[in-house]
Amino acid sequence: MHALTAENGHTIADSKGFLVLELLASTIGKDTFHKALQTIGNEYSHRGLRWDQFLQALETAHGSSLQWFYEQWFNRTGAPAWETAWQQQGSELLLTITQTDSLYRLPLEVMVTYGNGDHSLQRVDITARRQELKLPVTAKVTGVKTDPYFKVIHWDEELTPKAKAMSKLQRVLQLRIAQKPEEAEKLALSYLAAGFPEDPYGVEFSLLYAVARLKAVKGEEDAALMYFQKALQCSSRSGDLLAYTYYRIAQIAKRKKDDDLLQWACSHAVKADELNMGKDGMKELVSRLL
Image 1 (cartoon, rainbow, N blue to C red):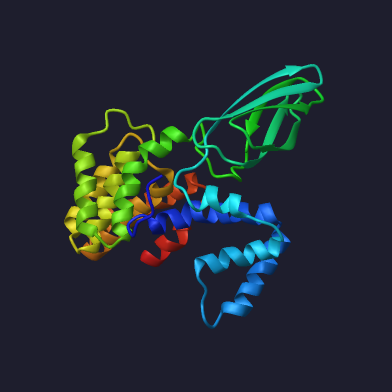
Image 2: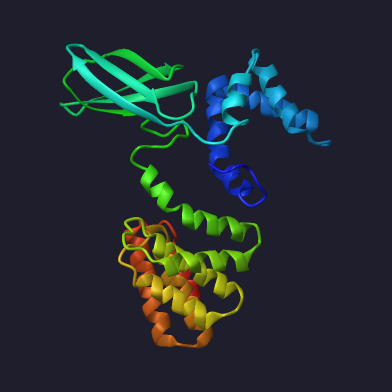
């Protein structure tokens, strides 16, 4: 995790920020957290408040020090990482959680899966670099997952490769958010020029989409159309962006009065959205466009 700057502050606040505030609410209790926010609203709504006043108000509502929480989540960069190992001995599960980066105090949930398909969710508190625990189990254990619902922000063993691969896209988006479109486009094009011999997460597709959007904003519709179409040629494509790629092509086609391209793009936008559980509401968007 990079240091907080004007370029990445928005991205961090909208991702890590909300996850940490949710964890803080769980730590002090949701009712206490909500009452503290009401008090803050009543007291500071007309004059504003500083960050230290916000933290002090939460600590006052909690009734005891939260400096350990503030120090590990607000005063340093990064996120925790851990490895989980386990073995079953009769009615006990011997669980070892090892923190592989900075040391954190972590309230975690552990999901135990049994051979008969049942599950049990147990809470553990981690305070050491390597912590060994014994958990009661009721049947043959076939799997163990630490923090299965991602309630504690961390570097997940399964998600880390994707996060690192997508970091190129995030750097481009940070520049765009910072209102530096020329720098964003230049960086994206440099990544694309370097090539993607292996791209299981669709980074090339997402970068091409980003460049197309930057071109479209500048009014360079021919260039935008070319990059949208190049994105569609990628072997690995993001399901979250695919429908919108077709939709953006449809918008350009409508302005160009290219009816064949318009119909083709609209049809594929709807199909891509259906494959993505209709998350983008393409049927309605396309109907308006047509």
